[in-house]
Image 1 (cartoon, rainbow, N blue to C red):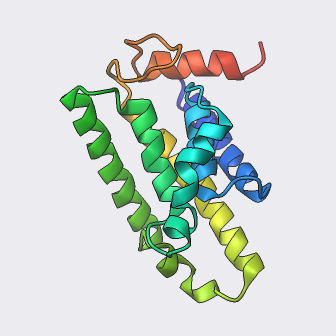
Image 2 (spheres, rainbow, N blue to C red):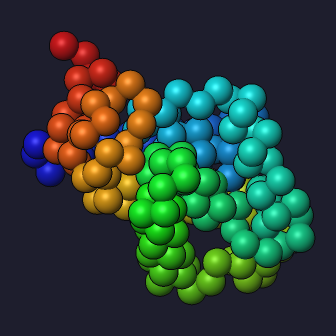
Length: 179
């Protein structure tokens, strides 16, 4: 699998997340969860994504705590890598979630919605545009981490259960790209 194909897949996932957010039909957490899970072959219905993710948007229900996009990324990791009750899978999803948090805070200096938006409160357009950009970037970051860590049978859906990163990405690209 060529690196450019993986990058193209990640770019598509990021663009979809940002587009979903900008449509104003989905909030940050919902947009990341939908874009990442569907982009990586998990068939999660929109209604389910909204039911799971809506409380996490806007910093956990408007409280300004953890960024909703980051929360959507963590939920995506659980769906794509979580794998049921096996403690190894649980540990893997926890480890990957911790790494997502580390990368997110390295990029944005905080995981707190309130801190991320403090300089733009009172400027709705700037606030919306910043959140849209963070939503897309977080979806990309999350999908990249999932692909980096999808070398065990944790990847579910209709992909081969023993799909490694290369075969999983190849299978996804076959489905997404025109012949």
